[in-house]
Image 1 (cartoon, rainbow, N blue to C red):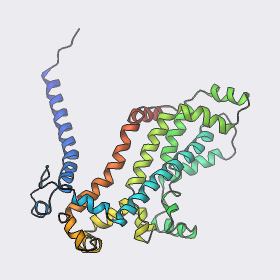
Image 2 (image 1 turned 180 degrees about the vertical axis):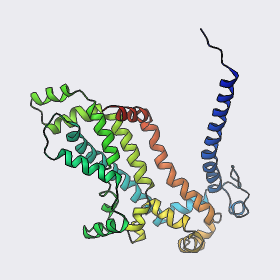
Image 3 (image 1 turned 90 degrees about the vertical axis):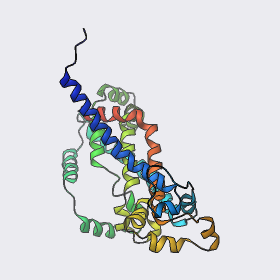
Image 4 (image 1 turned 135 degrees about the vertical axis):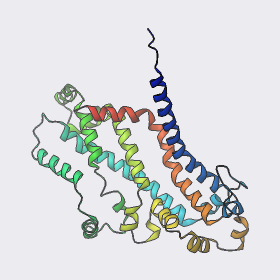
Amino acid sequence: MVEERSIGDFIANVIIWTVTVLLVLACILPFVAVIAKSFSSAHAVTTNQVGLWPIGFNIDNYAFLMREKSFLGAFGISVARVTVGVVLNLAVIALTAYPLSQDHLHIPGRTVFKIVMVFGLLFHGGLIPTYLAYKSLGLLDHFAVLVLPVALNIFFAILIINFFRGIPRELSESALMDGANHIQVLGRIFLPLSLPSMATVGLFAAVTHWNSWFDGIIYLRHADQWPLQSYLYNQVTQQRLQGTLMSSLFHGKDDLTFLKDATPEALAAAMVMIGSVPIMLVYPFVQRYFIRGLTLGAVKG
């Protein structure tokens, strides 16, 4: 039996769809405008003629950036940070979540460690104490300061702990009876079964590492050590393109001739595009695990 829909339901659906479409447009249109500006000519950009479609299509802004060593260096640092950071995050989280999820095993100090984790999730030491702690550990001006302090994300660890608790105890007990140790149980049983949750956590960790800019500026005092987002913040947000980028990166007349349509505002748009595309390409590969991993990690306890 098909239930007839009332006028109120129709009006509610219209409102919901209207609000949803407006929110989608609010997210997409600025991104489209940035794309259009990055591919537009210098005259069109400086005279504010560019809307949602490129005017005077050219790739000079991207060619400019591909010849800029500082930009490419920052891009490489970000790629290295995401690669090392995600692997380190997943390894530390898995090794932390496994013993904390095995409530039937007697592990001295587990309760204290859980309390410390929850305390660390709720409270933070502050910027100055954190800076002094990193300085005393010798992490300042080193690549390690970008990945080591955030190796254990407590929120992600709680997700994986909840997922591990949902794995039947009989699987690990039977493996232990057959002579396996806990590392083998973790690697051969828990991790393969928790692939959706681990992929979800890995995606979150990758996005976090890629988008982080504050730690690079605070803890790395040399610009050539900055990851891409810190570099973009310095060049775009601080509006230094006109004063430093254009003057310091053109090395001669050949550059001025070859890149005659590269402008500060369009270069900023091209930087934002190049900084956004790599992490967007990751989503299709982990999309099938995304919602499933979040759901399983959230409801099992």
